[in-house]
Amino acid sequence: MRTLEALRERGIVGDLSDPGLGDLFEKEMVSFYCGYDPSFKSLQLGNLFAIVTMRRLQMLGHRPVALVGGATGAIGDPSGRNTERSLLDADTVGKNVIRIRRQLEKFIDFTPGGNGAILVDNNDWLSKFNLIAFLRDVGRRFRVSEMLARESVRRRMELEDGVSFTEFTYQILQAYDFLHLFQDFGVKLQCGGGDQWGNITAGIDLVRRVEAAQVYGMVIPLVTDSQGRKFGKSLDGAVYLDPEISSPYQMYQFLMNAEDVCVVDYLKYYTFLSLADISALALEVAERPEKRAAQRRLASEVVEFVHGPEGLLLAEKATDIFFGAEVANISDADLEAIFSEVPKVDLARAALETGVNVVDLLASTPLWKGKNDVRRSIEQRGCYLNNRPVEDAGMTVNQSHLASAGALVARKGKKNYAVVRIV
Image (cartoon, rainbow, N blue to C red; front, top):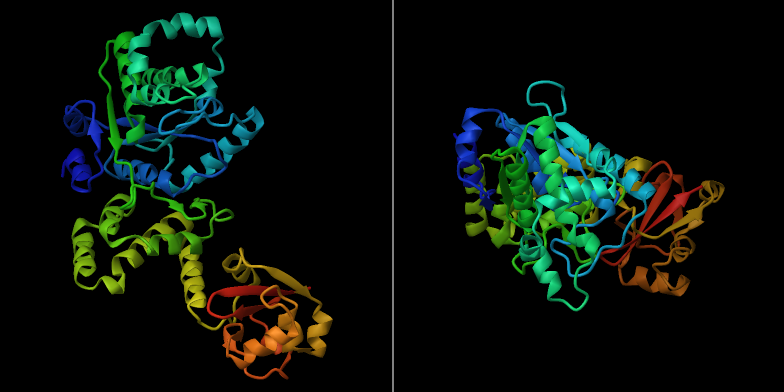
């Protein structure tokens, strides 16, 4: 199947600068780039759509160039924003660039030669300009009337705070990235989200004016839920690709909660499942929505892609535990990862060796207000140790009750957990 047709069948093509891109894909290995903003130390689930699209194009025989914006990240892209970003210092941006580079290397094949991906940082070339040289050599190629007409600028101009000169010039910097990558790496296509269309077309125009060459732009759809909220945002914030920020379990549960009306599109965007497999899952959604087969497959595919088989196994284990499975024979590391966000208290190992009354133990956690509260909870069958119900207030807890080598798990009711660490 032709490359562009393969993308369109999955709904990946939001808009194109020129339909001739389809023929170009068939004539040659196309070098294409997508940029990532290092305004935080981790990419998030929303960025993963672009990453998967880069990987998909690479699998179809084309060469990805992943750009991490060490220079533009210090400026801030006004696209899709109503207010100016908080500017980061150079040291923070530099550290974020390193972390994001490591993340991208997990998902795209950077093997040298052929269509192996290339990783670049626009600070390597933009930092070499001085102001006068940049205005003379690059700035003169732009017309203010065209810049003002860009949607990202026009919308901000209508707001009370307007747009700063710093943000206004962002499109020039991104446009120059395209020119530089065309000149140095033969890049002929820039990909990005729908909110990047103005910046992408600015780059296309600059390459045409400077090199009299045709290059292309393609935007992928903005992924949202049925309410128009950006995909990858939970009630508590973004779901990040870094497991130290968002655990595999958190990502798994977020995807498991995908709405029926959206999940089939998410499967097309975020997974490498065949369209036949996705159609079968769409039928499951229509006929047996309560089974959540499509959501489970989405969660499994994405978590394994991001966190590997070990991360998926951990997420599935955590899911079982939070739905009541006994916590037993688990490693300290896995227990810590699963219960990373619940309150923790410490207990001396010597005390556990002697034996601790279960009421005293549970009362030491913040789940209960005191011993009387624990006793009432036991009477009402709302007390659990390692997800096993506590039925006797006189029970003695010792080392045989450990969930892992160094921890016990207390639970009150259905969802309130605490970890007792043995120290």
